[in-house]
Length: 78
Ligand code: F3S
Image 1 (cartoon, protein in one colour):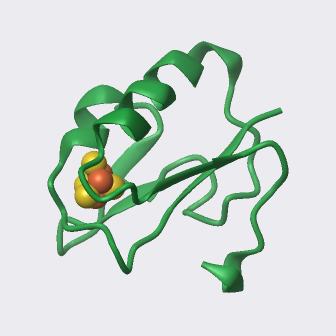
Image 2 (cartoon, helix red, strand yellow):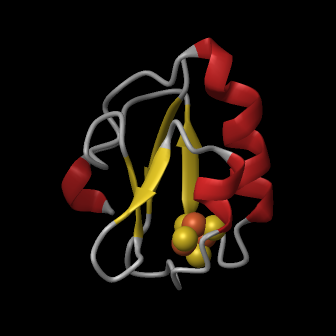
């Protein structure tokens, strides 16, 4: 399984991730990205259909703010 989360402290609101993976990422009022699937908790499994988009988004993020792991993230550690 694959999980993802945005490090909102390092995201510079560049907007590339939502373009690459509109089903996974959206932006808050400040333009900072978050994961739609689980409100950026990093605990919802990313559907297989979205994995290519996720990879593109992670590769395209200029600040490497998109974290990907095989285990759920622990919200307070981000
Ligand atoms: Fe932020 Fe990176 Fe997306 S800087 S808006 S997480 S591409």
